Image 1: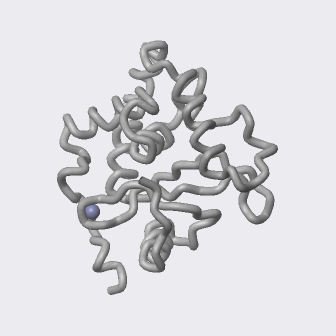
Image 2 (image 1 turned 45 degrees about the horizontal axis):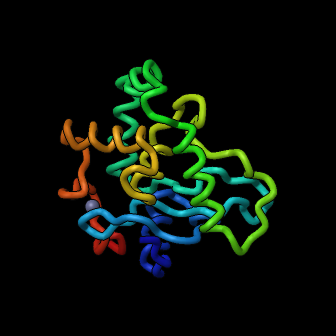
Image 3 (image 1 turned 135 degrees about the horizontal axis):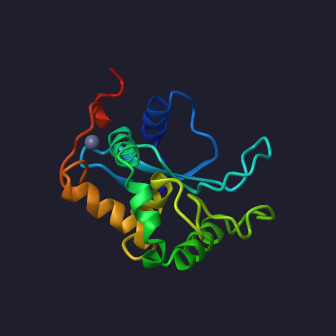
Length: 172
Ligand SMILES: [Zn+2]
């Protein structure tokens, strides 16, 4: 499920972010058009900065859809019934995935740190859906709900590409 990034993936992510990807280890998930969805990033960047967001959402169409949900206060709605999401488990899953991904490297800084406000609350929907896309349904119930909501509102889906620029057009 985690793929090694190709030269084209690195090129595309560079265009998406407007800068070269830092600490890129793998790619997880692709839009129908081929655009990478998640950049899996190492726990500590080359300059020593700890980087807790292991599953970094890069797909512009999905970033935008999630930002729209945030702007519509969906995060506040979720925080109102935070216990439904068992964030403690999602938090542990996140850290466990990172340990597996980074197992050949030393991991001193990030032992109890996940992302997105976990395990106590939700402060970033992008982090949650990142875990859902990378690790599959069940890894993060809150991320699963964000994905369902996007599908329900037809804001984004694996079934349909809504990217403005497609994977094979980035070179233009
Ligand atoms: Zn696409």
